[in-house]
Image (cartoon, rainbow, N blue to C red; front, side, top):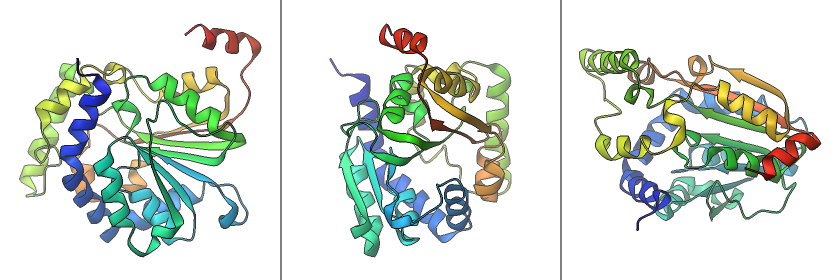
Length: 266
C-alpha cells in the first residue's frame, strides 16, 4: 500500500522543474534580497562561517543558494531526490558551501544540539506529522538556537466556503492582470488530494504552530503575519492574496517535566 509520504514525494518529483523555475524567478527578482534580509536579521550575531544552518525541505534550493552566496554554510535536506539534484544544479558556484542530504523532515538523522538555526519554507502544511517535525527541529537545535518557519494556510479553501470564494477571486485577479497563475501550472487535483489527507489544511495557523512550539519547549515565540509584505512580488501578492504567508519563530528552551511526560505519551 502506498504511504502518504511516498505520495507526497511522487507529487513533488513531478513539480521539480516547475518549482525550480519559480525559484529562478525569485533569484532574478526583488525576492532574493528581501528574503536574505528577513533571514539574516534573525540570525545570531557573530562569525557567519561558524554558524550552523539547517534548511528543512529545501526544494530546488532557494534558501541555500542565497545564503551560500552571502557567505554562509548551509546543510540542506529534502525527501525528494529529484529536488535535491536540482538544488545542487541551482547552487552553481556556491555548491561548496552547501551540504545536501536526503532526509525526512519528521525524522532527522542529525545528533541532538547540532544547529544554531533551522529554517523552512512552505513545508509544514505538507507534512503528515507536523508536531513530530517540530519536535525534531527543536531536538537538533543547540540550546538557544533559533527556528524560522515560513508557511501559509494554503488549502483552507477545501474546508471553508468563504475561503473558497477568496481563492477563486485570486484566480480572477491574476487572469485580469495577465500574470502567471501559480496554481494552474501544477497538478492541482493531486495536490488537493494530498491536502485533504494532511492534518494542517483545516487548522488555523500560525496559532496552532505557536501553541505546539510552546509545548515542545520553544521560548520567545513570535508570530509575524505580515512577513509576506516584505518578501512577495506583486505577482505573488495577487496569486496568494487570500493565503498570506506568515513566519513563526522561537528559541530552543527546555520543556517542563509535565510537558515532557505529555510528549512521551503522544
